[in-house]
Length: 592
Image (cartoon, rainbow, N blue to C red; front, side, top):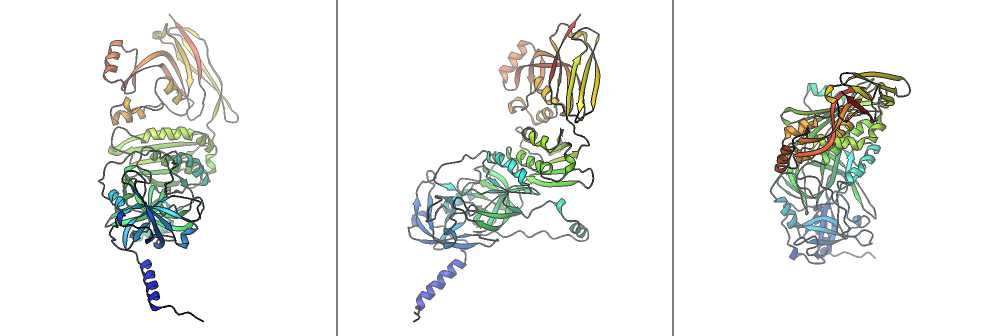
């Protein structure tokens, strides 16, 4: 016998369904004191695609001052069957919670992992508004975010890497982790450079202007990404929009990297699916076009404004081929002192290690041009004996790149960084067979012959004899003839690998110091004397009078320094286009 449902119950069921089918618009905020255990609410998020959907929760209570003085946490049970098997999901960060048609908060914290009944923490709506209302200031430096054993684990966005091969992604994952970024290659991007545009589209663009893609309209519960790199190489963390106030967007419900004031691209996002896990469920997504700028990264949320994206550093990496057209990667990176060099290096590594260009196996020349505002530039070249040689020297490359890109003296970042990777016909690595002097004691005015013998990669023996005219001023000094790579001789002659910001006083002095390196290929042969160097903004003077030294160092000890080093009296650069990582020192005595 069929049981008839009363009309009043049908009406209530229909009312409930309609309430879940429509998302509150411009919802007022419900106060924490008005929340009661047992209240039912709905959380809006994107399960797939771009349209948000609700799921049901029940208020358990409010943990007062859980995250600090005045920073409480709303605890809710996730009662919806769809989320019971996955719990709070990375990527749901910021999903708005509505109770009685009012905004209560944003999903933000995982408070347990393996329990059979799922709960989650929500950042109160008033804290979201506090982040939205903060005034703008200068961006902060990136700082590593320590891992915490706190029971309140924020649903940190998983930063997805796009455009990087698995080899390069694995190589850089520990480096990003050191800066507090958990990265994965499990994600995609609908972005791309103009240079990647198909030939057919390029021909069409000559006849008619192609319409730019329409920016999506964000709504509470919608997916949004904060990018650190855009273009052919992407790095972005996906979360959920908590609140929309005109052009102002609040999202995530927790910090991204705790950077404070920032300037980062806000991007559209499309959720592909949710991967359930007993440990940590996550959304996987495609990162879309830039639709605005994130300006705040705070304890309770991130916030920003729809519109144009922020200023970024444009990067271009061109790989020249022995046969065929050149291949170019184009991407832009956020302007953060620690992050910018790492992202640029990842793109360069992709061009070298993540390609099918067999022509690089013998070796390649890597050239770069760093363009600062006001047409100020830095340029450098480095040789590598193949992709493996580059991988082995990656730490040194990143350190050198950081020194060139970071700028502690003026509020400016490079506008553009261009790299060219040019294959070599032969492996540039050579082996030293002999380095000797025709005599170790010579008279002033005589000539000493320096003989250098080396063997090319896999074979050919070579020899070069260099005449060294003995200067009468060298008589009576403790001298050595040194053979060393340019970088090694830089350090031996008192130039530090990393220049302290306190040693310089202007952006112009900084650029001049960066340009003062010896060549990175070949080797230098130098006659050197042991001495004490007195330096002013890295410009060294040997044997400065003690009175001048004392006065200068008393006025500015960081700027003026004294160090023991080798003073070059004569120098020549040989073996252009070769790599020889050997240091040899020979004594030389000059008599009257």
